Image (cartoon, one colour):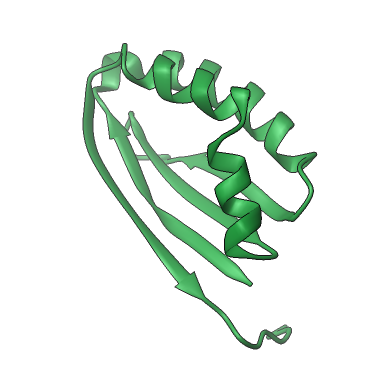
Length: 100
């Protein structure tokens, strides 16, 4: 399994525009083969800061996701925003178990 986790930040004035971009991306991605979970969560205290969390069955599944039209639309839309930071990390997981 592959996990992607991190932060994407935009200027606070672009917060709502970012939310509009995220909605269709998440909906389409959750329907993809090989996607386990996918989401963005807005910081409750820092407008424009979004936590990203993804789980993929394989690196191939994530690679296919990166080539989808909905990902291209999202990236093009982000190009119109004042992005102030991105820090995403990829983790390869060989085993996972329920904690609680």
